[in-house]
Image 1 (cartoon, rainbow, N blue to C red):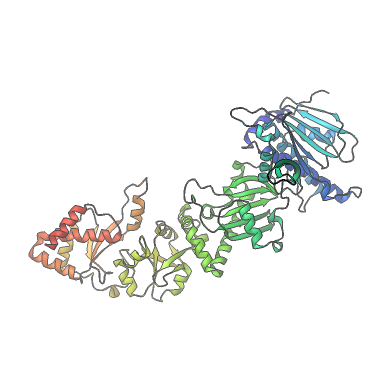
Image 2 (cartoon, rainbow, N blue to C red):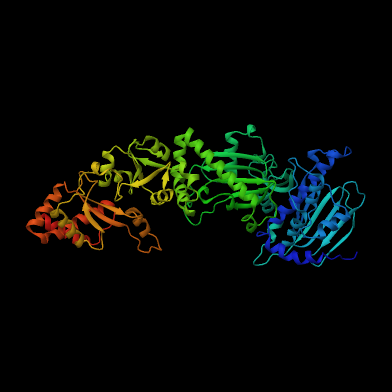
Length: 625
């Protein structure tokens, strides 16, 4: 039988396709199994219109066999088979899709979609095989045919003696090298692992002979090796079952089976969409964050399937970073089985799925927030930081999606509250949403800067995460109310309510001017405080960079020395200032010592390091003497 040549374009594409479309050699088995499933699907559709065909589900299967001595791996199906012309047409042109043509001709619309594109997937076999033989007998044909090829040189088609309808593909596996382990594709256990990974939810049984050590009958300690034929795939994926049939235990068990985490899922979401794009999804919100979640090593993404066949283990394009904690999978009949990671980044259908999933995840989180506050707070303690990063990142374009999901501790409620709850409790005359920053809630409660706002009876949000203030700066406002730090130079309160401290007499102003000169380069101003009641001193800030933000930025590797514009505020009604007035009148040279002490105390209150601890302690000793 004369050897036929591949079409010229196909010959050029063969090597390129094998090395670029697939990043892992093991997917060849996924492709061959998908094609076998397609062949059985075609038999099913043929039976719908041909009364002479009886389609009993139990008669249709896919079988995997190995022969280590001959280095052969065989994939057999009981599907519709191929004629001589179909072998030449489907396997003679790379990327020729017999399944796709069949689908178009028969206008298949129900759940038994055709998942493979036979030409492209079939040639993945040459990644692991030196020779590929296909024996096929088409439904209703007397003669069976064999297709044989050793790669790009061409192929031979000749008659063969196959008796049963269906197709058998035999791969002669390459010899292993130092760099490539091909022997693994002759090991039943490894093949079973690959099938479970990629083809577990193919709707027809995938059968293999597997060996197992069992206790000999009648013996207590003697074992024997038993070889049994087993079905190695689950067949019916949970996400394609009716939600009414499933229980919480079913979803929790699936979470464990897929190894999404060692914890229990806090919440699950089962989505089934049949519109412009068809897809099913099962999403999980974990109970706890993985140990490496906030590190560069963490890899986000959902499993991506095409009609039950795994395309990608981690598809990051399905989730924005702020929802990267979500685990689960998406299965779409409208995605190509051969889609690459590069193609995913530009796939319009995938972007539509992502948009819908984001909307659904937000809805479920808001529902959890309303109906089970304790469970939501547990989620927020694990992943709230990521939501706040989401508000801050991408120039704030996600803030409208995330703002209602945020929680902060409150001065009046002494628990986590939403921004909406804060605004609902605002007093009629209150213009701003007030917040204070610090390392802990207890430390914030003692901040001198909170005194005036507390005296007004205004609620204060506590920001203890380093991302909090950055996120709020990006958010800008909530329901028309702007955010205001209690350390801001202007608290936004009426002057009358803040006292007459703006009206400083000449003697006091002289003291402030002297102190400002002493602290030149450290503070931008020294002034009488509008906010202090019982404390003698504090730092406030002018401009967009707060003192807390300065602390965060100073710890970053690319810190460019960005600093807050600090103001030293003095409580002129405090006994300490009266002592300073007396010192300034009797011994002006002593004012430097008092100024440095007050400045360093203000730094300590803010949690900032003092520049020279020895000088500070010497100043304190000097005053004590």
